[in-house]
Amino acid sequence: MNATRQVPRFAAYAMLSLLSLVLFAGAASLAAAQGIEDAIPDNASASRYRTGWECDRGFRKDNDACVVVTVPEGAFLTDSTYGSGWKCKHGFKKTGNACEPVAPPAHAYISAASGDRWLCDRGYRQVGETCAPIDVPANGFLTESSWQSGWACDRGHRAVDGACVKVVVPDNGYPTFDSVRSGWECDRGYREVDGACNIIKVPANGYLSASSYGSGWECDRGYRKSLGGCVAVQPPENAHLNFSGNDWDCNQPYSKRQDACVLGRTE
Image (cartoon, rainbow, N blue to C red; front, side, top):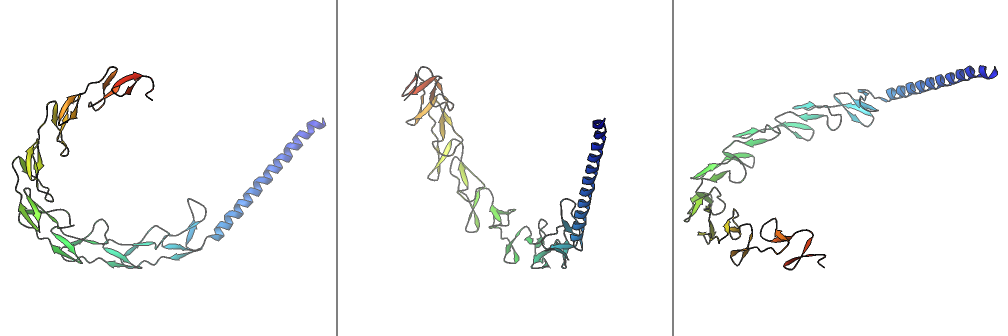
């Protein structure tokens, strides 16, 4: 009987202890919350995303206080509580703690991308703080670039000392838009040699390549270059043409030893 009576008494003690812990934790949380609230300075609010506080809009953090953001003329408030707390409007540029209006010169406009600088109109280029007209020579045209000269030569002409001179194209050649180099290239099957277009002599079992360098031709699969011609590749027994087709590899499990394929290690 005594043991039976002790069980409810133990449960009652356990319930009282648990209730005491809950009350203590609640009191501690309330005290902590009260402490945080007391620590929030004027013109600030408790942070919604983390512990601590954040300055209200129009104020920025300065040590443990929130000071008012002084917005200069030509600027607007930002949502950032760090830094200056303001940015210059479109058409103004930041200079120190002020926003100065951008003043484009004649034949210029305010950049739509940044809003704090100006660009020259098409047909003009920046020279110092002005936009000077681009002098396009005969047989030339305006480019979209405002860098360098701002113009390029028509096809069949190339730039020489600020002018577009006619390109003299050799036989078996054609004019290009490349006004920096010769202004012409050789037809397919020909290559430049000393200002002329010489025919590329393709040997038997070869073909013209797309490369403008080297010999200008390559050998068919199963052949390799040798002494200006294409000779047949002769794979030995237990071998096959490799990936490029101009040599051979041994079949597995054979290994290459000089001009043969043998079983076992090659050392």
